[in-house]
Length: 314
Image 1: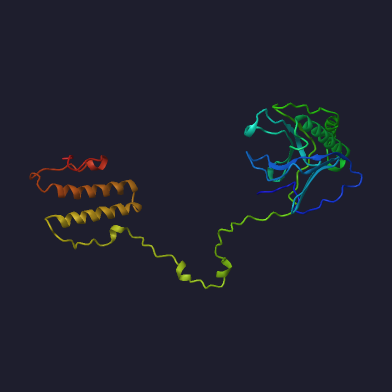
Image 2: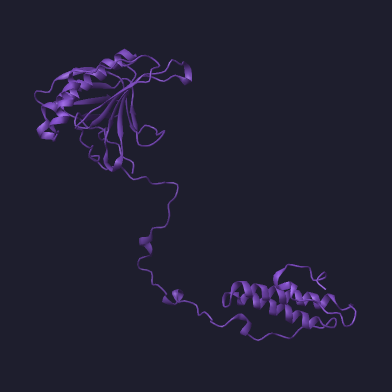
């Protein structure tokens, strides 16, 4: 199911910061949310480089005042599981990529929503490294100071205390990037507001509630009677015109062959099929031997195990 986790409903005013909350960094850059558990996924939403980004000792907050609406959101330091700096490449033009800061979180249902910052005040790798170091220290310090409240075990708290000191992010243009795993993360909750369900306006099907009061004819749903007798049990018609001697007999044999084939569902399938093939070939053989020499005998056993042309099995 599609969910956006880090963007508030349009027009939402996040209000002032909490009492005692300290601002650690402020600037402008583009912000986007990605689903890192989906390969080659498109961003769920994006905000332009003019977005105001505020990093505090408790969260990162971003606000963009557009022409007609206010877009804002925030990510608390409870949630990030990985912090990564991905430097841009050295290409130019369409093949160029920009440097990114990625905050990857553990989401509901095995998802990994990620908040990505790029461009604006983060146009160089050095700028991204400095902001990533601020975030690393803020996240680690917040979890160490609130270890009991958020349930961080003592061994993880000791590891987090080391992240307050280092290691420092130090990347270069075209490099592989660096990632820091942040212990003690808490799963991101479901979105606070429900998202509108998709509806294709091009298709307006019938409203089934309009048929709720329609009477139902029970006879329409009655099962049709099914005969248990084989097809070959029905009488065979003998009303055929005789244009030449033996034509009526040939027609009867052909009809018998057809019904023998239909009887395959009541008998052994392989045997019934072979019997039908034999009857059809006998009919063709009789009609083809009107000018044969008297007394000639046809070997019919060949038709049981081989597919031989009637004119050659003599």
